[in-house]
Length: 376
Ligand code: ADP
Image 1 (cartoon, rainbow, N blue to C red):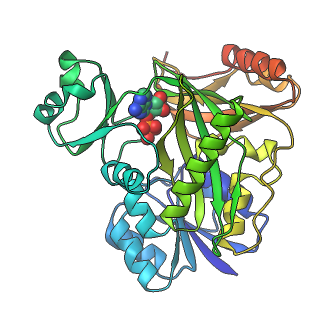
Image 2: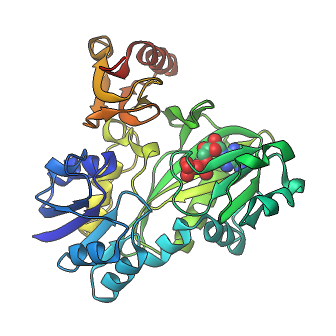
Image 3: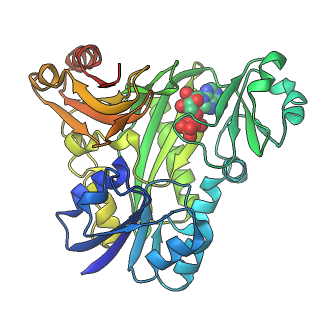
């Protein structure tokens, strides 16, 4: 049996391993936290730091292939493993471009992929010197995730919120909708495209509030978005699964925001909503089987279950009965022992071809389900 490695043991690793059960594959996982969401689902657990060269190299050298659940991994070790014949999804060259937001933006420019205007900054002074881009969004180049390492800079007074390190300052887009398209790329370069998702953000937490698939977008926006996503992914020249996040503005323009070179939150609904889920697809790619069918079975809405404000400690789930008493509602709890404000603790998928029903249920879920700690 093929030996597969996953770097990182959070919810993405957990759902990948749930799908791995159906395939002839032996799974290895490396993660620092022994009680991480995915830890008990792999065949072989290795405690280790995914950002350390030695840890990643030692973990990977006996494997057939490896994938990641987060970009912040040791790239040099993956490069060496690749040279020695271990296949890495995505390949290290693609990961290198994506891992660094400055390089990622330059990649879009080089390939004529529409994206918001930007400059590279390294200090607050440089940030202040680029006021012509305000209102703008400042993003640390390395290691940001889920809105962390992202600050909105509206004017000079906001500059103290910026980052005194390598970062991208990009013009703020007048966002009408945020959409994502997931594309699977096989080892032979063949692609399969998932229908677009409409992501609705919680402005306060800067986190996904809910998402709907398929996205309700004009045909022209759909064509632009699909063309942009295909162009971007093809130019990365790597097999794997890619979530392309885009903005549609009020004038019908589509701009690329970023690419995640891995399974992604914007694809969790595919577990119930599509014939081949993003996790099933990832195993088909890595095991060199034919790509799966990306078509939707029914429309879906997805709500992230986020740790409640003011609650830190052992997680307790409230409202599970109310949610599960609704038809066609599926709960995914990630098994994180501790909750804290804003932490992703799970998600709930609703399936129905009636948009009104989806939105009604999303509201009910948001009003009844919460995750809190014992301490308050
Ligand atoms: P992360 O990788 O941490 O998720 P993103 O680059 O996706 O960071 O930014 C987080 C959110 O900030 C986006 O989903 C979007 O709502 C907002 N945002 C990011 N870039 C821009 C931009 N250029 N204009 C307007 N809003 C933006």
